[in-house]
Image (cartoon, rainbow, N blue to C red; front, side, top):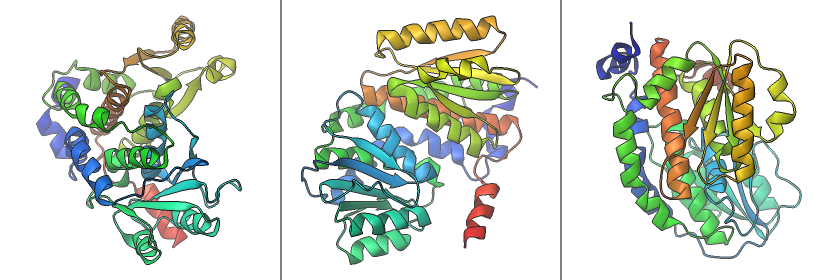
Length: 345
């Protein structure tokens, strides 16, 4: 069966029982709602000399990575991630800590919320509710509400915009609301170009078909490193398939020596990357192809850094859903994660 027929709208809907594809295609429309929700939280505008820390796990954490990437080269203070139970010892009253948990009950994020409070740091919660919302409201901490009904990873627009608005409120980065709002139209056009009614050789469907029998290694460089992580995580969860993410130039000092079947290399590129990184990508692509490794190249599309970044997110999310469909898997359930959470109590 060809990818054209396997990835028709009807074929996708027969597998995608919980509507993950619809959540992905809604990303352009979610931008305005995400901005409104951040506004509604009335986050105080106060400089944080120590920068911004986003504490979270999994799909709730990726917004911090993407926000830092969107502000690459423009951040005024450090923007970092905390994935775990503890915060770095330097975090204190001059730091804004954004605690992001879609459910509001992620134990690592709840621990970070308490640790940030003990350190005297300013805090913002990003969540649908749960223990995080209850504790935040009890302590007078602003809450950016996220709509319920998604898998955490499908709330990527809300988590990213929340982190960007917190960066602006804390002075860690400039306000880029105009970029966010302007990206909706171009992203909507890309959703149509790559969506379920597109031809079988459209970018998203072709990539899904090409990667389905491989183990993809996603290569990011500069501003695309966070997008590579997003692709890797989405393929892991939506397609329930192995995938890995790496970063140039570091990968050229070790991983480039270790390619063998069934690995495939995917390079996420941006026209505004440093010329040295663009040259390194060209050389690495040639080296891997000469060694027989399948290589795919993906160019970000858009006028602004935010739009280009989110084009990569949208494409990667679609590719992961299509890979799930090609494997006959519903892209929504994550039984392995559910079992781990049950075991943790």
